[in-house]
Amino acid sequence: MWRIWRLYDPLRAMVVQGIFLFGLAAMIHLVLLSTSTFNWLDGVNARAKVAQQTASMPSGVTSPVAK
Image (cartoon, rainbow, N blue to C red):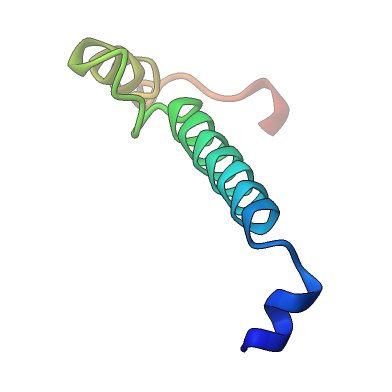
């Protein structure tokens, strides 16, 4: 293991690893915030609005594509 650290500077390796992990965490949080299920900033009201918008249409309404 000590031979690996002779090739790489330990401080630089830890800084690069920290930047990578921060970027990965930020990306994961932004992906979750873009979904309606896991968006914790909008709260419960947004989930109710999404559920209301995605409710099924009445059976008497047909799609214009089906004709």
